[in-house]
Length: 392
Image 1: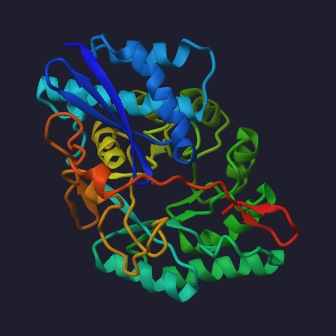
Image 2 (image 1 turned 90 degrees about the horizontal axis):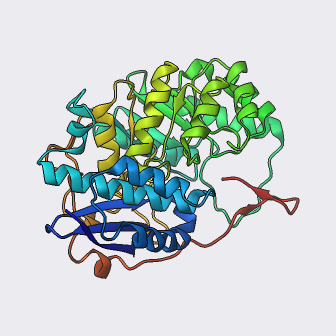
């Protein structure tokens, strides 16, 4: 078998790559460079020059060449490699008549626990949305920001005591509303300093969050390790890391309780499998990050089925404010971008079924590009009242 073509497509807010072969098998992957998809698309074109004419089978060989040939890497390049890697695994699975997880040594499970997305601009809206997601069958929520998802065009300021007290009140209200048979995956979106992160975590202890994600910017492994060392609730991070060596450094410094690899950024299925093995050696569980389309979810489920240290899978439900264009006022089990693909995983009682069809498990819908035209993410950050910026 030989690779005959590599095609990338910007559809809606996602970047997909298809790798074609001379045996009629086409592999599908997704790139997760998020705000820099245009740069990643250019990197895909460059890698296509290398891949066309090659046997798609030796995935590890191609993975190493693409990472190592130029000596330099970054999110756009690693995102491109990730999409291509997923597509190569899809080809291999289809050619051998097996789902990808079978080729990785699985399955370890036949379904994966998932958490839905929740987003709100007020406390009442947050409580209402979380209760609706629980009624739909979810047993956990994520993307749960206790600082709320306020208008990014409005300048931000709160005194420290009020900022912390208001956020604790949101968590307390949600816990009271849903009870203890429901997990809270708290997402801070890098809003705090290390000192604030420690103080806030201590106030969250009575509400038993499953994990506390990215309380600070993840750029400093040492700062993340200092926070993790000083708190008792489990800390999660990793969605921004694009190298197995980032995770190796984080784990060596004991800076995390749950790793959050972005499969469409960290080197695809090949890279994520390596990261899961590193985490396993440190007794750390894996929560695959997925703010993308169902293609990324299918890749995540293939990994989830193949590793022993899987914890829970991010499942990007459509909800209030989650679409960059248009909104939905009703939380649902519908996946963001569901219409872009031919099928989505079966969801039931808080779990998604592991795909059993050969390869990745889904294809792009024939009319996806026509129905979902591309739109670019604009560069913007919320201003602070003092004239600087705020992570949100």
